[in-house]
Image 1: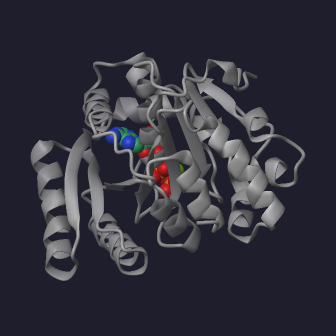
Image 2 (image 1 turned 120 degrees about the horizontal axis):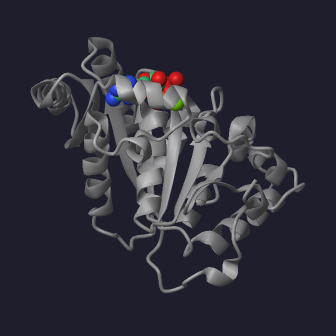
Length: 281
Ligand SMILES: Nc1ncnc2c1ncn2[C@@H]1O[C@H](COP(=O)(O)OP(=O)(O)OP(=O)(O)O)[C@@H](O)[C@H]1O
Ligand SMILES: [Mg+2]
């Protein structure tokens, strides 16, 4: 098992960490697989990536990478481990914070726990270029908090009408309860570009009519049996078959994300993210 490298490597002039959640209204739309492939590809570009597996019930990003984590954030909150000691290197430049049920505790921490966690997080803020957060699906409180703490929210939707309806429900509650008004949309499991655009339009039309939000079309990924097979083998499709149809969509998305303006506002930092999550802000 590989753990976090020495903090001596930290370049303090680096931009703050971009925080991006990958979320969905409906389950099984490909969030975790997409996030893992995005993280892998950003890592290949030399970007330092931290993943928070925020799916409490089905935390499985480690498994997607073919690794198994021994510790979770639970051990950090109980002061048995330091945050940097539980980080698992899942691929070059990519580290995972195994979440698990310990995440439930984050909104109910004692002051000394909050302080200790934030100190540990702020030490890492200049090391990582990206924090990618895998959430569960739906509108549970935990999903909403994770999304509202992130700087950018990427909603994964598929042409399935239930996915479109559930994405709308998620966007609506994030807008109304958390005043989020900007979302990136990725359409997964599509036949072709036309189906991706028509799916995006169906979602955008209803959102435009009833909500005051902007939805940015970030890209699409074709329904590709090779991607499903790669998942079964615990492989990253962008690694094993970068020319596969699904890889192309993922790699376009990586370029899109990597090209996002690097905001220096406070919301774009690890520290801000954890402050929001633990209610310190
Ligand atoms: N573009 C695609 N083409 C084919 N299969 C895909 C594609 N995207 C994802 N899948 C497959 O769909 C399955 C579900 O993916 P994944 O677990 O990533 O979804 P999820 O949204 O994270 O689910 P959950 O809501 O349960 O966390 C996996 O087997 C994955 O390989
Ligand atoms: Mg998942």
